[in-house]
Image (cartoon, rainbow, N blue to C red; front, side):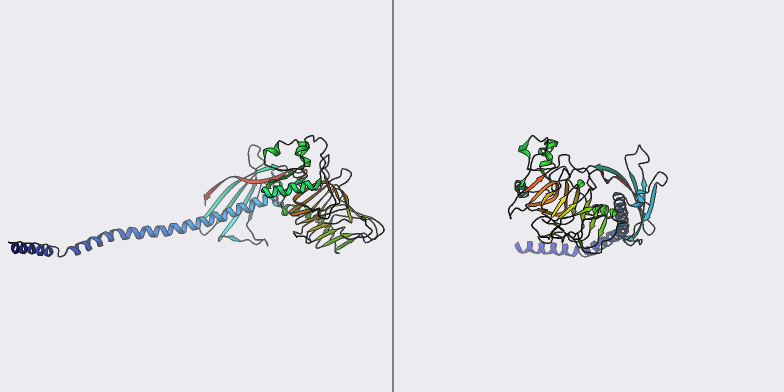
Length: 438
């Protein structure tokens, strides 16, 4: 019985196997048909994607090129180049092509960039100062950006404090600044009655600072001073270069008052400079009649004899600007030594470090001096009786003994050639913009 059942099963299996012949061919034909139906649209879709990718890349390159034109125009507006200054109701717009530093027209991302700046302040009801139209033109296509520029006026107050630091200091930095303040003899200014807040460092952006009475701000230090109020090196350099653009160039590296008092300025010195008095018997006075612009390392009153100052520098309301960015002990951009006395009012500015040790008084008779190290540090040495204010990183070094007295002027600052003292510092930013295809 079992053998019969086995034979029956074998017969059924053989029949099933025999009935599957040709099944694979059917599946292959179905796959070929389906593949034939899919491949053509798929290839067409891929082709469209490749074309779309090329279009996207071209449009992206045009957009970035047009944006570069906007940024270039904003820079020209911010720096008020002559062509922007010349825009009036009669000449409302200025068109130009983006160029390199040599004035040669260049392509940005392979696109020609055409820019038009239009003055809009002639219409009182518009909230914008300028309109910028930047067009990036490629082969058969182009992208245009219309940007609307608004101006904001910021009044710098970096001369309102005894010491102003731009950095946002951490706890260690704040402690170091307050230790330096403790080394100084800081009298309270007239009208300040809350002496518990004097001689301390405050975050410029804090409630504690905003609550300090105005009369007491002259005897404190502030840090985290806003960027909008801190002058850029390029802005300061351009301003003081303009002061000396028609001035004589000093060919020597030395100004020696050995023969007598001297009045100079405005004056442009292309390189290093030393100001001294080689006469060991007679004190001399060097009076500025304009801006003194020096590109290299500068020393004032660093050598002498006789045991007392023999050189007085009268700033006379003017500015000594040292464009050197040199830093480090012994390599300061500007060194003022103890053979020198500084009389204000005026400003002493260096891009790099300042070594500040005038002997006796600096800024006497309520005629203060403003000392600024734009990017470096000012090191104050003992023996200074200083009336004025200091900006930038500060280090008070009393390792050799003595005392440094720093006093803020009762009447603040008046006759100082510094760009943000009496002038509004105007900054420009993009208020809105629109992108369109050409």
